Length: 114
Length: 114
Image (cartoon, rainbow over the protein chains, first blue to last red):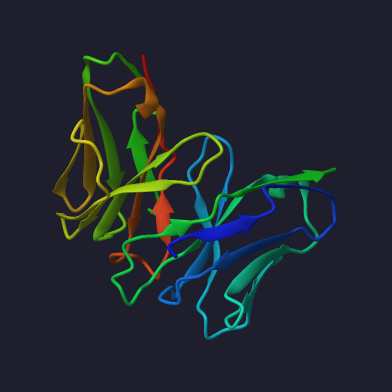
């Protein structure tokens, strides 16, 4: 119940395409859902985050869609660029429970072809 | 200063060695974290310090010993490690325990145990 399932494991798109990464969770105690971007040799960096009372959030070219009833959320990258090539992790945590433990998805390795 | 720094960048040690990893942040964050990340895997939480006190130990073997000397510093003391402990060790901090705000990650220390 603590898991966050992420798919696909890897993704290749052409420049300008819209890669979509999907995540699903079971624990209804989760109330904060961040996405992290990690480049090789670097630590993860927060990209965008959403709470379950919001169905969509946009920040620049990144959009999160959230379906509370299905317990699913996804990341869309508009007009993807080669510089977006990285590993993306969805995550979930419960702020009500103290928010100490972030549960990460398995990660999606994105490659954007020039 | 919105940076978490970690030293050293790389560390090679034998199974009988004692070494320490260091992490520093000057953002005034009161929660600090140690994560372990194996190749192509998500970060795994090891320890959480909240207001310089150990709040979470995720059943980490005693050969890993964390220390938080003050609100800006976090150490991880290593002793009698095993080859399977080779990984990227990430430090992170957040404004308050669990965030809900951004969790800032350092670049990590790449540890190799021979």
